[in-house]
Length: 65
Image 1: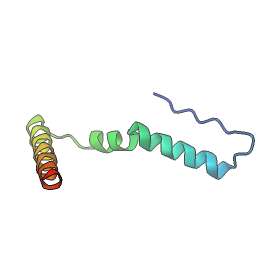
Image 2 (image 1 turned 45 degrees about the vertical axis):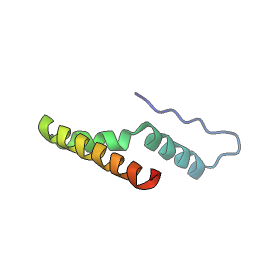
Image 3 (image 1 turned 120 degrees about the vertical axis):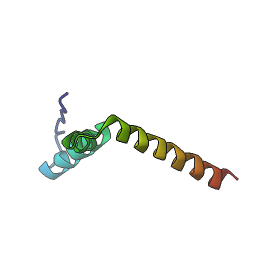
Image 4 (image 1 turned 60 degrees about the horizontal axis):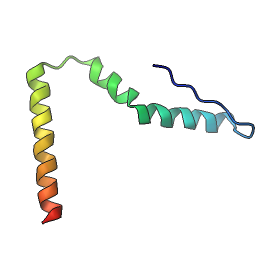
């Protein structure tokens, strides 16, 4: 999994770095590294997943009437 950013003829170093950072965020690498840095038990992952589903359902009920 490599990220390649090619600099155009008029791109400055700063703009290339910004493009790289946007691509890293878009591919979710930062989040994946954070998730892998600490081990979470499967039961804890399940609880977080269910809590997120509950939040989404409540948010949908709140805004959809």
